[in-house]
Length: 147
Image (cartoon, rainbow, N blue to C red; front, side, top):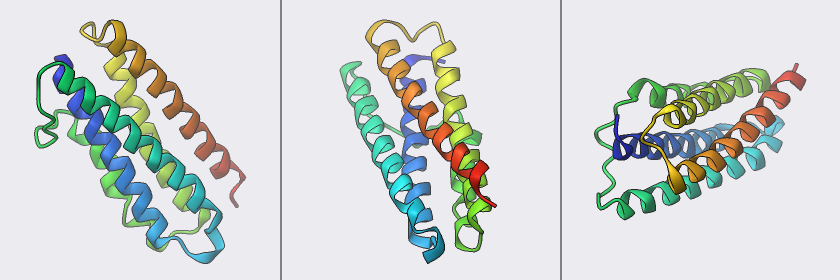
């Protein structure tokens, strides 16, 4: 697929994750206020990841262009769930957040399977993927505790 395309897709899904968590925080009702801190943490995490990936695109001599996503269906996982947060109960909110986390986790897994991802870039993506997995697991744990 090419390093640039892979990076562009990861930037886009990270940006979608930021938007998804911000939308959730805007719409969360008082009884789930504790989720705002969790969602803000992961929005900040993805903002940082997108910046790191953008720097790598620049280092490779390209400009960031997220209008040409190849992995569009992955990004839609976060885009589609934004409307769920307004009316959902705690378990529904966390189910949908986990679904979005599954999508970003899969995007990183796919990127790391690509033979063009080597050296420093592989190291960056491996670290980010591990942090994404930890975020997923946290949200999954919260979901499992929800009634």
